[in-house]
Image: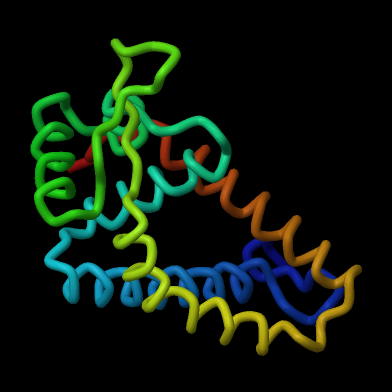
Length: 165
């Protein structure tokens, strides 16, 4: 038996888990695309908002240059993206009090409320579907998701193989 089809002890192979994760990823993308369509946002705009919100939750507001690095965009493409998000009311450029040279990207309260209309029901549905998981199971799921995310990030940073044709 190869590693791709090996039974990992619980009856699910690595391939089974990969397919389940792919299905979740596709559904997540579809959900984000519907949110974007309702708000006139491109997929990259939705990704940018997620990164900006994550940075704010972590206590270190996202800068335009940090956003460019995270999204793999040129400075001019990032400026256009931020201009678009700002014009739609989803982002504001602010200058932190300690360093007026820096620009921080923040999401105004009205945009947070609007985003909540889309994502709070999803959070509730997730919470309901996870209600029967005990603390130990939740730890395993959290570890699985963290290592799967790290693996995807690692592979995503690698150079693609040269085209054999």
